[in-house]
Image (tube, rainbow, N blue to C red; front, side, top):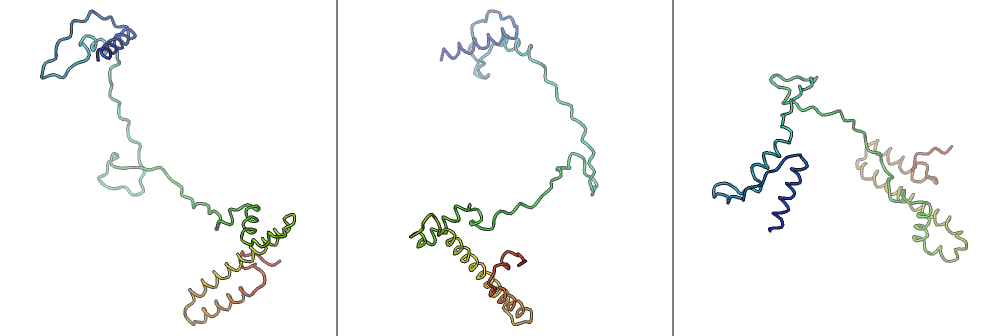
Length: 188
């Protein structure tokens, strides 16, 4: 405990020397009274340090800028208004629809070979990779067709003329041998 007290005195003496304050011999410490809190600095050192510190000046409040509100309200003062900066909100860019779209060509080939593991037997120089990818593509198209059929069946529950026309178009689209309807490509 005594070492800590000496350290504080030495630190304050060094601060006072740094600030250019002349210190006088300190009188022996006076025991604190029961009513006042104990002081760690003598009043002379405190006065010398505060004399060297800059005086506090309250900041001058700047006048509030004029707010051009489209709907001015009666009775509002400039202090009551909160003006936010203009923010432009743009829709987030859509990422790929499925996890499959994130895969690299090698990842797609690995997935196809894993799904159709029978193609690994007799796979000389990776020649069965194209077949596996074609099979995987056919399966994905079949799932997409099934999803469209399911959607049409759930949304056309009545026997109106429009529902019959939608079912007829869906049947024609599903029976096509190509997958142009799936991604919106034209056959040209």
